[in-house]
Length: 393
Image (tube, rainbow, N blue to C red; front, side, top):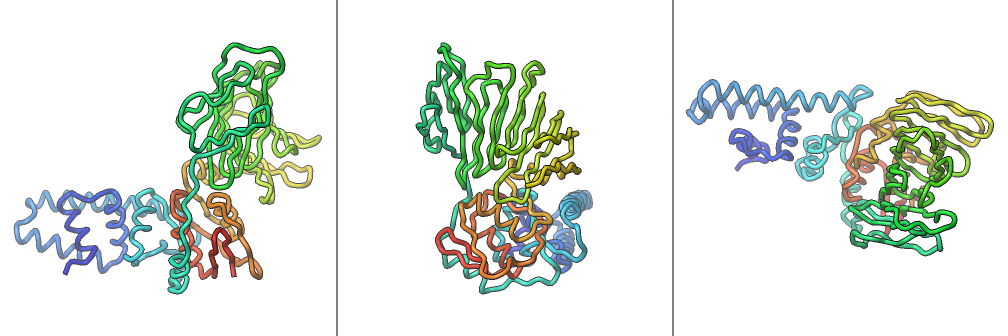
């Protein structure tokens, strides 16, 4: 009877591997036993004349080396401590998760020797699964009325003092119309937990909102400056206009002054500090009477005090959410679970002290909660899921 690995070998030799199968194939080759099986199968087929001579064998060996180099490159990016191994190694029963993660170049790492706790795997099966977050938001208009955008079709959503509010492909845009007199209307776009959305402001500035976030802005920037307010986590690509500087107020505590740039703000109230990370351009961080100017690749950290700490930023980690990834590299248990709580709309309850664990790796934000909770099982973190309450024992 063919094993799953032998079936993958057959697909490899007939050039019929899907991307997911290819990922699983190179992954399973880490096991020397599987590598020996592959060598034996190729030798047997070559001897039987089922391969097209030495050129075919050599070509396949080169392809195999290229695949293995890709896997090693992924592992080298993730390994920061010695003696680690990928999650679910040698566990074909968890193949669906392995295929999904590896096909996307996403992985999770465990201390060497860590074994799966069988009782933990059963915990997820017992409870109804929870789907990941998706696109959706609430738009609050100037008169206080709220428009739920999740189920609306493309087209005009509202008219704010002559400016048309349009929904187009999961993004809000503003189209100037016949202007009315008076002050521009104020709109607020907010995402609840388990939702994300984007908006193109009237000046062309693009804003992406992570879960549990908001941005407040006028429907027209008529004055000498442009001002918006944000909460939660947002990424902005500000439209350049040196004559009309752009200001972002963060939780009514810190101000970012912008001329034309791309940057990310993480200002969740349950996080220990506000982080402003600059990708390109220039921003000036102001808190009370102190100020710092950021260079690309730097981030400013502000907390309850007045100090502004500037340090090099891990851009890939900061921007992982926008690319659909949980980047938990170096995260402690509480920090990792806060991300899950916002995306899966969970309440996290701790019975006793928070487990002192350090996570290494990445997971897709499109995974079902049960798949993500496997990570806790692998780290021997005891948990119980009841409805949307995740209790850490």
